[in-house]
Length: 128
Image (cartoon, rainbow, N blue to C red; front, side, top):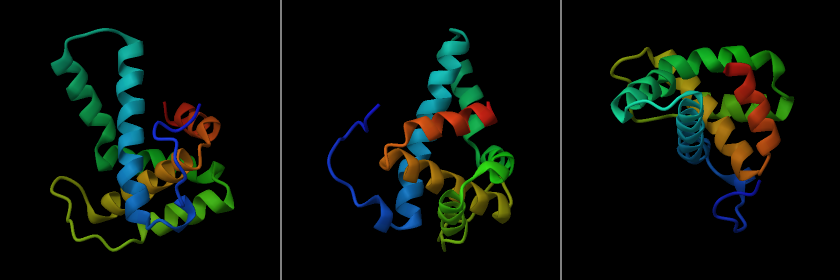
């Protein structure tokens, strides 16, 4: 699979927060597609289930499951995202969960922009 916008992108030099910006969407699409494939139900119910999975608390748990299987390169991307200075403070989660989630999203954005869809699927299967 290719990226949706298939133009050159210097993903290696993007800021970790820019990678997280894309990774957030990548994860949201994965979760929504997964929920639809599991079973058709009212949109309101789908939305509630989606919100449960994409919240930073859940993402923090997901990255904890993934840490043992990440390559050195992937771990470095995650840490860059986790350690990035954000101006936002979480409303319904700890600051630690928020930073872990940002690292998780940065990793997903990096893999997507790198077009490593196979690796994204491997990681998604671990957290599913």
